[in-house]
Structure formats: C-alpha cells, structure tokens
Length: 372
Image (cartoon, rainbow, N blue to C red):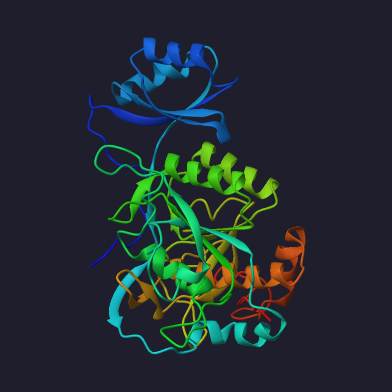
C-alpha cells in the first residue's frame, strides 16, 4: 500500500530527545535573533520568511519554555507532521475516459467556454511525475522542500509516492486520447513537493511551499493534505496566500465518524481563508470517513477516482484528497473564463448543487461543486 491513510496530530518525540519546532519572532529574522537562539542550544534548520519564523531543533521538548521566554520570540510551536489524504486501491490501464467525477461536476459542459488555459495551479503535495504523458504538456515547473540524502535539492520535485501525481491528473490531465481527462485540461501545473515518499512531511515545509506559490505568481493552491495540529504559523501562511489573491483549497480530512455533532475537519482546511472540501460517492452520498464540520464549504467526487500515477500508470483512489482537486479544477476553469479570484468563493457557494439536508450542512457544506 502506497502512502498514509488518515490524519495524524503531533508526532511523538521521546523525552530528552531533540525536538523540532517553528519559532515565530516579533521582529525581523536577522543574525542577532539567530545568534540568540543558537546561544541557548537551538540548531537552525531553515528560515520561514513568510511567517517571520525559523525551523529550529531544540535540545529537548522541555526546552520549549526556555525559548518561549527569549526576548523577541513570539511563539514556539511544534513542527507537526502533515499527511497526504488519499486511500489507495487498485491500478488500472490507460484508455481515455471521461471519469465519473469530472462528469458529475459538469466540467465537460464548461469546456465549450474554455479549458482553464494558462491558469497557474500549485499542487502542494508529494510532487508530480515529470514524465507522465497525460500531464507533461501542462507541467510547467515546481520546487522541492523535503530532505533527500541529507540535502534539500529544490529541483527534485518529481513524485516518489504517486499521490501528488494522482491529484494533478484530476486537476489537469490532458485531453490526448489516452488515460483520463482533468477538470481543467489546459491549466498549468506546478509540483511543489513538501511530502516525502511515505506521503508525510513537516508543516514548515508546507509553509515554504505556500511561500513559493506566492512568490511565483500561482493563482490556485491545492493541498490534499492535513494535520490535526492547529499551528499559528500555518494559519498565517494560508492567510498570506489568500491575501495575495490566491484561491486556497484543502481536503477536509478522512477522519469522519458519521456523527454530525462532532467536528473532524483538519488543518489547513479548517482555517477560514481556505476552502474545505468533503468527499462524495457516485450516488452523491458522503462516505462515513469524510470529515464533517462547520468549516466544510463544498463537496466533490472523492470515492473510487481514477487518475494518473507514477511510471505512466493510472490508479483508483478514494479520499478527500481526490475531492479537493475537483474543486481546484473548477476554480481554474472559472478563473480562465475571466472571473475574479475575489468572486470565486461566492460563485462556488451559489452554484453548488444542494445535497443532503436543505441548505448548508456539515457534510456537504453548500453542496456539490459545479464547474459549469
């Protein structure tokens, strides 16, 4: 089985062992601030300019209180683990089809008005297969923020898991007579690798990926990942992206319990600047594992979704990871059609197909996303 299923919160770290944190500063990150942290035994891993912070290895978890009291330190938070939100199933063979999810949201009807041409979409995930024939024409670049062989090579943003490639195919697989067709088959894809080959990574790398998206003029961010940890630095990062005019979309999570009185929505989907997406099956039902809660804004196809995979393959997966790129593709179509980013959320809410209880509810949000 490839990747990780479900949600995780704080990773356990043994008492007395090095402890990885994000330290947000009151003022600018500079040499004197770094020196003050190092003098207390902190090891600086990297800077996070977007949130005015640093990733630091502390001698132990017990050292958090000491670093919290340092002059100029705003907050010390664990650099929590974040996970891909797919549920792998079976491999299938290429033979171009209009997949049920793309059809269900009426993307094919929208293509008469354009196919998302040129809209820049950052897939913040495990990377994207650089050579997949169903993606390569739309793949315009990317960046890596994960460690491999002891270094961070920004050019190694190719997918070594498959999850990010699957997400990318739902958004913008090419209409080329093989495999599948994405919701917005002419949108531009950028692979922003923040998760490793196991489908997990650090929130600080997600923050770096968001900063890259802002600095490189992305119009939409897709995050089919999540964590149970509410980290202010991540909150600040997604807010910054939204304030920069980027439409930010994330998976609601796969921790649903079927009880609408409980809230299982994960972060970053739970933040108000992010569009949180739940999953639906082909009969429009919501699977029990799809997280519900007041923050769920839209629902989209997320059960048995066939899309691109590593090594020129195709795979069928379920999860809110798969629902999210359906919404991302729909947003790309609307942006390419001339809609302003500032009008996107209101439009998505107004045009969604109401399902479940009448009006807004915690399973479907405003309803099933519609691209047309």
